[in-house]
Each structure stands twice: as structure tokens, then as C-alpha cells.
Length: 444
Ligand SMILES: NC(=O)c1ccc[n+]([C@@H]2O[C@H](COP(=O)([O-])OP(=O)(O)OC[C@H]3O[C@@H](n4cnc5c(N)ncnc54)[C@H](O)[C@@H]3O)[C@@H](O)[C@H]2O)c1
Image (cartoon, rainbow, N blue to C red; front, side):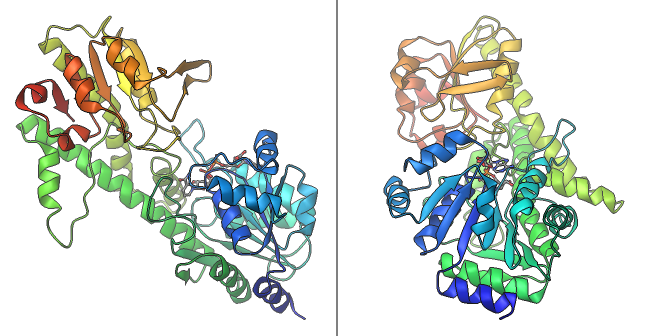
């Protein structure tokens, strides 16, 4: 039988063994979905703490149901390892490793390449590799293929198949998750495409969209996230203008979104966080340079979003000063350092720059985040969350900066007790505050 028929047969009969490399926010939910679909799954990670936790049936990702994970581990459907020799027993290996930026704000593909080299060493004839990490168009057919071929001595298309399928998971989303979000697949060659698309059709309850090449799939993912980045930059710029003109930008957006077509609401914020939206446009900008192409709009959006922490702190300082409170020495509470509400992820959170700027102006900063107990301001310095929301109220702060509004907190009581609150999250618009309380709050 040919590779394609063998693989399709194994997939349709649930005899294919699936490897997932990188067991973080993307990889672990994916590994669980695959095991729930009836496949034997081996998860790989270089962090022994994650491997040990999973093998003991302990979940550490919010979007994964604890009982699902422990049941899959107990039944033997899901196991984890840091030993890449076990790649040899996997038929299809998916890479879900980080794709950050380096110190020059350029793509850092070192995790993709090192995990590909580890996988390639043990890759067997007739297997499949799928990249799910977000990256610039050309990565899969270029440096990833080359790394896998060099490490394995096998030939892509003849000995093993290779494809790209972007991960679209939105951590904390109550409606869409790994299981029901449509999946886009691009692969090198028709046979590889059929095998990879068939695999996802067995796992997810959503459309599997086949595109003509990995480059199309890589590009569409960057388009999705750049679209968000640019729209957030647009509302941030409009919010700045509205403030100058004395108009409430939140009211403007709420009015605009009553249009049933042609407008999608985005809201201003202290900046853009998370592992995707702030970084992905930089991948596109970087790749465009190879084609002597200037991504003017993408670069401007990046700059506008990056300017937001400094803009917010200026507004905060000016407002305090108009109330005869000096920022220098002010006891300041920052509420919420996660990059969005109700998640435990603080990667790329603008809170880091906000707190650094506040401290540089002499403010005495404390923060509270029920999801993030410690927060690194630099590789050398961590700060720790107040223990409870009650402390936010009892410690008599001079001012509060609401950065991320997690649900379930008593914002009206906090606002009523403090002289001044700057609300970068927009939560105050939903609180029905009376006129007296409204005077104590300023929205971004
Ligand atoms: N987090 C999201 O919301 C999200 C959404 C869509 C796409 N993505 C993309 O998915 C990819 C992964 O993101 P994430 O948020 O899951 O990252 P993460 O940091 O949560 O997880 C990555 C995991 O990979 C492991 N790892 C690193 N190098 C490795 C190696 N050489 N071998 C094995 N394991 C290794 C790390 O230890 C970590 O556990 C990124 O490209 C990201 O852009 C993320």
C-alpha cells in the first residue's frame, strides 16, 4: 500500500498514533481533543514539570476540562514525554511551540527549528509533520522542510508528508474552542493535503478548509490577527481623538455597532497583549521586506498600539494632578495584569509597561489579579499580587488604574472608596454609576 492509503486507513480506523510537540495553551487542548476522538496521543515538551503534571493527570490549562484530562491519562489514551525517541512510534506529529519575537522585534523561529530537529532525528518513513505555530508565509516549505529533511535523512513528499494548519484557539472563549472552530489546512502535495485534512475531520466538529499551499494557510492566519491589530489601533487612535474633542469614544462605538452590517466593534485599551495579536503583524512586516514591500498600515498600527501605555499614564498623571494628587509617591493600584479578562495569561501584557512607567514617575504600585499571582517586570524583578480584592479596598489607595476587568469583582465599591480611578477597560460603562461616582472615574 502507498503511504497515503496506509495513513488514511490508520486515521479512519483510529490506529494512527499522534504526537503533539509543545504542551502549552495550544498544544494541550489539541492533544486532549485528539485523544477524545479515540486516538492514542503522545505529548512532548522540554519542560519536565509539564510532562510530570500531565502524566499524573493534572491539568494546567484553563480551556481543558480537568476530568477529561485525567480520564484520558488513566485510560492510556494520553501520555507525555520529554524523550523524543518516542517520536519513532508516532504516525503524525504536530508542532505547537512558541513563535515569539527576538530582541530586534523580528521573528524568532528557534523553537520551531529546535523542535523540528528533535522530531526529525526520530522521524520514520511514512509519517506526517504538521506545523500549527503561527509564522510567516514560506516557513513550512522553506526552513522547516529543510530542517526536517536534514535531521531525518528522509525526503518530504516521498518519505514523509508536511503541512501547515494554523491554530485559532481563543483562550477563555465560551463559545468557540479547539473542537468547534473551523480549521484551515495547506500541505506540500495533494496526498499530504488529503491525509492532514482527513485527520482534522475526525477530530473537530467544524469545517476543514483545504487551501492550495502551506503559504496560503500561513498568510491567512497572519491576515486574521493583523486585521485585529489594525482595528484595535484604529479605535485607539479614535479614542485619543475623541478625548481631545471631549467625546466619549465608548458611546461612539456602541452607537456605531448598531449598524447590522459593515462594522465590527473593537474597543480602546492600554495596548495589545497575548502571544499572538501584538507579535503576528511583525512576522508579516518582516517577510514583506524580503519582497521589497513596505507594510505602511501594519507598521503604523503596531506603533499606535505600542504608544498606548505611555498615553494612558500621561492621562492618569494629568487627572491626578488636576485633583491635587502627585503621582510621585501616590499609592497606586493596578487592577488586572492578564492580557484580557478571565484568563491566566500575562504574556506581552501592556501592564508591564504601565507599571514600569508608573514606578519611573515615583508611584508606589501594587497590583491585584485573581488569575496572576506573580508578574515579571523584567528578568530580574517579579512583583506579587495583593492576596484579595478586599485588600484593594482596605489599603486606602490614592488612585486605581483598571487595566483588565476580570469578571466577578465589586468595581462599584472600589470606585466609591478611592479618590480617582482611570478605567482603560471600559467596565465602568456597564456599572450604572450615579453622577457622584462617575466624577471619580475617567474612561480611556
Ligand atoms: N496562545 C494562543 O492563544 C494562541 C492562539 C493561536 C495560535 N497560537 C500560536 O501557537 C503557538 C504556540 O503558542 P502557545 O500559546 O501554545 O505557547 P506556550 O508557550 O503556551 O506553549 C508552548 C510549549 O512549547 C514547549 N516547547 C518549547 N520548545 C520546545 C521544544 N523544542 N520541544 C518541545 N516543546 C517545546 C514549551 O515548553 C511550552 O510548553 C505559537 O506559535 C502561537 O503564536 C497561540
